[in-house]
Image (cartoon, rainbow, N blue to C red):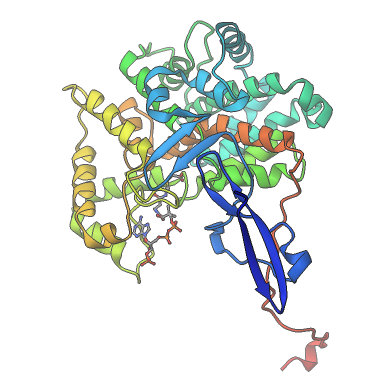
Length: 430
Ligand code: CMC
């Protein structure tokens, strides 16, 4: 049965069809609301606003379900490689053997960045935040391939652009780390997997050969997969917002990286680790951390807790719990921050404030501790999120580009400022 919603305003009736999704989610279509009634809707933070129809990722925040193109995150985390997951998100299906081989070849052939770009790394102050470096260099990558700015070429050479970005982002991330510690760059090697290559570029040096630990390689693969997409989150919506003006993919991704940087979004993983370190070093107790988080006069929040969509345990955090058991069951891999994190989780989950508001650990709560076990420094944690999220951003940019219903994203506002007034010369201003 076709459902409809009616709004009556000043004697005029606006009737809208109800849009129903694959999993029976419902939306009220307001496309002609303003034209027919003069009204717009108001929704701070877009808590109730759908910006698009999408076939990429399904999230059920009440039941804690996450699926990429229909595949449960738990299955992908166990069985897929990150390049396979990237392909799935961007092209819509798991790759065949031939498609995966061709994609891997493209990743290998496009792993290097133009030598001129190396100056960027060397000229940045050592204190520069790696997210700032990453966003700047991703934008600059486009300058070295201006033919991709042309929409026609974007369609024809999309595969090349995708492989270039997915491959180069890990090179940029590793080079920014090497530059920050004043070591020479370690270049990507053709015979390594995506994750092994990244770890090798981060930690190998001429004086210190690096052997990639297969457990850490597998853990990195899982971490990147669980971060790979999360439907219309802040950074993905930013990519779509910028892309809706027909800005090129590099500029759109650059904007997405900047949006991810903030502590309410991807920057939360760095903030979690900083909180844990503060507890460890300053002697602040877990109880004091929770009291601060609950205090409405204090801007401090418990990073890694709460989510706009999940009102139950974040399924990505559950996958990471399993990963932690594997990693930290080894005697060599112990981290006192893990005990602090577990105590924080335990106390928060039995505290009325967190129970009433349905605040559970999100993906950022434990990811930092896992990355720390690999030797990734705290200020690189959000960069790791960006490497993982890149396929999702690209998939959404492509979906928006291919969708004939797409429009320039341009919200409206209700103006609350001064009515018309007129210029006063300086001496007339009281
Ligand atoms: N610590 C303390 N209180 C919190 C927290 C928290 N982490 N999260 C939410 N609350 C409170 C909030 O103050 C509000 O209380 P009240 O109803 O008394 O005003 C209530 O819970 C509802 O929160 P909200 O801020 O209205 O909900 P939201 O959907 O706008 O916020 C959020 C979602 C993720 C911004 C928020 O939970 C938060 O700030 N969490 C900490 C930052 C974080 O971990 N971000 C990463 C999210 S997961 C990775 C990603 O996809 O980005």
